[in-house]
Structure formats: structure tokens, C-alpha cells
Image 1 (cartoon, one colour):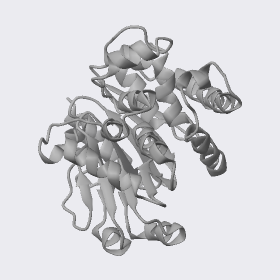
Image 2 (tube, one colour):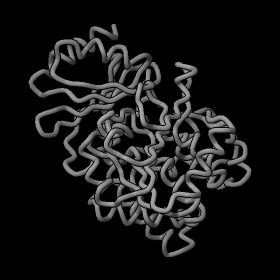
Image 3 (spheres, one colour):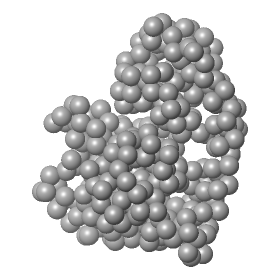
Image 4 (cartoon, helix red, strand yellow):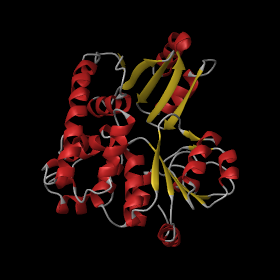
Length: 339
């Protein structure tokens, strides 16, 4: 969690920013983090980092194009020192993945002091914004974290959650789960449509406005959600057929346009908590995967030894990319690691 001093400092830096640029991860936690900070003053631009979990020198072209006075980096696991060296303006990095050693940046990560801390970036951004409770709740749940303010959310938004439940039931058996899906699904599809949808989200006042279709903006977001959710539900029906007595649930799919690997993995994990899960999508000669299970990050690290691929993330939830030619070797080692 952020300290009072850090909260005050970040609020002041946001208040005095004339043209901030927000780089954010393209998952639910990342989008919620951006919306929470942007909606405070509604200044600047946001940029989704979709192609990598690292902000490297190549992203400087966005900085040069938009010429921001300050840069905020949200929920990005790694930022190359070369990027920070060339930024030439104040950079503020809020994250909750494995801590990194960097210079020329204001860096906020709860795991620096407590390696076992699990605080989503959106939870810290909510400390700064102190508004948009619904976004903070959805962002935290999207990163599989039950926020301490869930009772406050229940009191204000009974339509979405009328009583406190455990995480799996909250996310997958309550209406608040629609808000969690929304943060992911609104980012699917052609870039122009995603950009428009995110822009509209910066103006939405409440989740009821969307799901009760109270305004034209709410109707627009709801239509996009319904369209993407239909594709997801059809795919999830297929994924459920992969559940057997085996300790591993392995599901391959070939959706060409949109990736649902993380969402499928999360829902299968919630329904089959004693199993390990790999959702794999073959694209451009590599399997892009979401993995879930107890200490799965450790199993993944071992399975990647001697294999052309990379991956990582949280202890029980992570991602990986493995070259198609090495897939069978990787899978064999992974299965050995979970015996």
C-alpha cells in the first residue's frame, strides 16, 4: 500500500501535470488503474501496452509524438533503464510485480518492503484518486484480490453484489463479475473500437449507467460488452470439455482475432481449484499461454529450462510464450513438475 506521504506526492504531481502520458497494462487491473488516475483531472493521454510486459526504448516514439510533461507507468512488470534514461521528464511507476532496480524514476511497489505482498495496482491508484469505487473494486477483483472496501461497494452498488462472498463466488457467480469481464472485454477488437470504448469509459459515472443502459454512452459500452461476452461464453463451453480426472486442464484454441487465455484460465481455476491449468493459443509460431495453479510460477520456471520461451507473473497465476517446436518438451517438463 502507498503511504500518506506517497499519496500526497502523487496527487500533487497529477494536479500539476498539464499533459501526462499514462502507459498501462492491457488487463483489467491495468485499465482500472489508468481510469482511476486519469479521471481525477481528465488531462493527458493513455496508451495500452499490449505487445510486451516490458516498457522498452521502442516506446520512446510515443513520448516524442505526444510530448508529455510527465509519464505515469501502471501495472507494467518491467521498464528498461534505457527508456528511463531517454525520457527526460519525471516518470512515476506504480506496480506490484517482482521489484526492479532502476534509476531516474519514482517507483512504487509494495513488494519492495514485503516480498509476499499482493496489492493490485488499481488498489494503490484508488488510494490516490479516492473516487470511482466501482472501478477500484472491479480492478482489484480482476487481479484476483478481494479489496478491504468490498463492504463499502456492497452498500453503494447492491445490484452488483448484495452480500460478501469468497473470491470465486464474487467474481463468477455475482453480477459484479460483469464489471470484471468488462475491463477485459472492452479491450478486445479493432484498435479504433477499443480506443473509442476506453474514451467513453473515462466519462461513465457509474456501473449502473452501463448495465441498466441509462445513457447513450452506457448503451454503447453495454453493446460492446454483450458482443464480446458472447464469443467468450461460446469458447468457455468448449474449454469445459477439457476437464477430466487429470491433474492438468489443458485447452488449446485458435481464436484468430481476440485472446481470452487469461479469462478462460481464471474461470477454470475458480471452478477447479485443486487442478493446474494451461490455456494455450498458437499464434505466429508460438504458443501463448495463461497458467494457473498452486505455485505454478515455480513449475513454469523449471519447465522453461532449455526451452525457447519465456514467462512469469504471480506465484499462482502467470503467462508464458513457448516456441511451437519446443512445445512438447515444455509440456512434458510441466507435467513432471506437477506430479
